[in-house]
Image 1 (cartoon, rainbow, N blue to C red):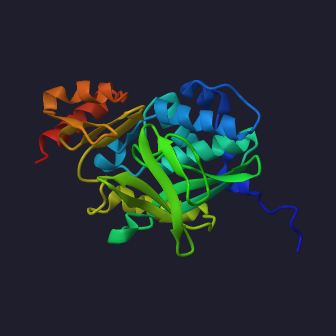
Image 2: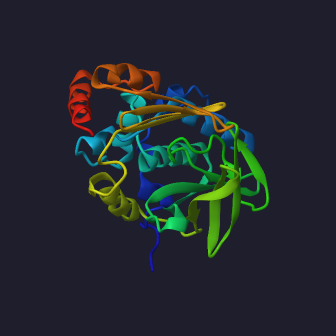
Length: 277
């Protein structure tokens, strides 16, 4: 069989469609030779710069997963997005920089029958495979080596990986016990796999992203979330501050989470927000 015209993995994902310099400027990073330290710095910078948000599904739009469209939204228009957008963007940047990247899927809340709808990445550098995931809400700040039995500090919260049938589980120490955030295996995915999952997540009435606003930001020692009308700041010691946000307070709350909508979208979100129970 003649393989000379078969697409490479990078071609399948169209990583070259990303303006890498614009992405690096968005997150405040310079080009660097692939290394574990450079991967960590890039991952952290992405989490700090780009919000997790569901404005498009909330307004009845299914986000495009084309790299050019993701970059236009998250990089050039300085919006945020959810897991597919964040991690497809990160994967394209990493591949352009010379990293070996595998795109995977994960089952959310595996102990309660959650769906296999989350996207994460396996990145190989310096002889080690790492879990990279900039799109799990306000999840992990830094990539984690794919090994069990080691606890990792993620912006003040305790995380670890444990063995799971056929793969691994990402666990977070919460309320005195380890709880599974998601489980995942090593199987590489194809673009169509995310198109199918994205359709469900963006359109299904039982999706957590179609019925109420979700915006999340992670920084050292504080996780800030706007879930519906509730603005919450959580801390690793379990303490939290809670504020109920009304329609007139919405724009300010979004700005406090580094999310700046244009006037048209802000109007539509405010209308949707006012109708929430």
